Amino acid sequence: MSDRADDRDQAIARLLLATHLPFLAMVWAVFAAAVLVLVIGIDLLGTVTRSVWDPAVSMVRWFALGYGVYLINRLLPVYVAHGRTRREFLRSVALFVVVAAAVVGGLLTIGFALEAVLYRVMDWPHGVEAERLFHSSGQYPLVFLSYWAMLVTWTTIGLLLGAGFYRSGGNELVAVVLALAMVAVTGYGIGFNGLPFVGAVLGVAEVPLAVTLALCLAGLLPGAAATWAMARDVPIRNRTT
Amino acid sequence: MTLGVEVAGLWLSYGAVAALDDLSFTLAGGRIYGLLGRNGSGKTSLLSVLAGFRKASGGTVLVGGQPVFENPRSTRRVCFIRETGDTGDRDERVRDALYTAARLRPGWDRDYADALVEQVLIIDNGRLVLQDETEALRARGADVTGPAAVVDRFVAGRTVLRERQLGATKSAMVYGGLDQRHRRQAREAGLDLGPVALQDLFVHLTQPPGGPR
Image 1 (cartoon, each protein chain N blue to C red):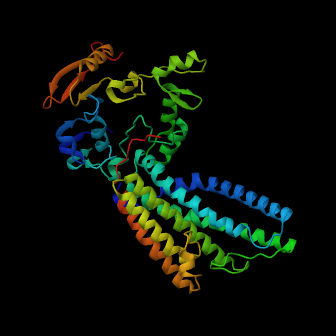
Image 2: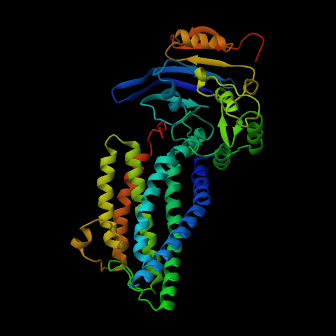
Image 3: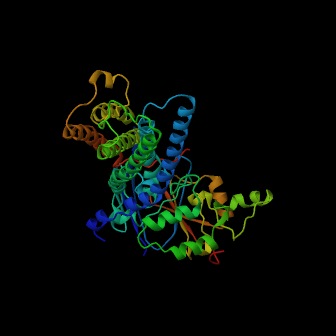
């Protein structure tokens, strides 16, 4: 068995996708049902004036953040205990995050499209948040790109925080500072900044798509590098909870 | 395939505290060893380094002639089970952990694992039950089936394999010395404490006369 063969072993990514994608699909179904109930409630009690799905999706970023923390704090020790190295796990998690974000981003885009159909039938205006990359219901590639980038970004922030707090010894403080910087930089680009004041100071992003992607990478790469640095040789602690 | 262990000049520190200090020993493959010692003597720290859970501060650790830490050639062949249950989430069932192992361990023998689960472990509603819990569970009316497992708490945490599954030879090394309580427990378990060896840190335990019980 050569090291090169080990590098090509995607067992971790396959296992993560096989076990987590069905769960994420179920979460999406619950989320969609909740948004539908909310829309019906707004219609019964008042007037539907804009998309409910789009601002609800912005809440998903906190779920993504929690998932990132979970991947490091809970699953890294499990995979090491099953004979995998941290290096293998972190590489596989990067692949998992990109693919799972694409799947979940696709589902969120489908939900947005279904909401647009419902609004069209009901003759409701389907307005979206002003800070988004997209400005109308028909821009589905941009909708998908926004949701996918948001999920990748916030899961990576969760990975960083998870690595910082799992390693501790001052790393948690570095992780928090870096995470805030990531939120500010990538949020300005993809329209999900999630921080108070930042949007007001920087205004709405009206920049070319290439600049948006560059901002995403500028926020993601240092965060991913810091996660790698903190987790690549982290001791596996005794579990206490 | 059995793997030998070679440790040379190993030390491990937690800040200013040295948990392992210039430790050297060699363990031949094909045997079963236990590690004994007082609380805080460094047993878990040593095993964590041997299993690649923790990076040594210095020295070398070879398992099967290969470095362990972050070396997939070695980590694939090492399994370290702590009582904190690292191989799955706390709520996970035994079969879930075995499913994960089957997906991650090359050459995993699923049939053999299933057979061991049936023959060796006591499963109560999917949860692993150890020998010392069995009577309490039965008293509560739990449906506990299957043969008993040997629990050598003082040797290697919670051992879940019956003695006859362990083979003919049982050995243990002692790190940090044994107090009277440990020695009494060893005698009660039918183990003979052998001569002190390896800089007075390790005691070799031999199989009791008459073979495995």
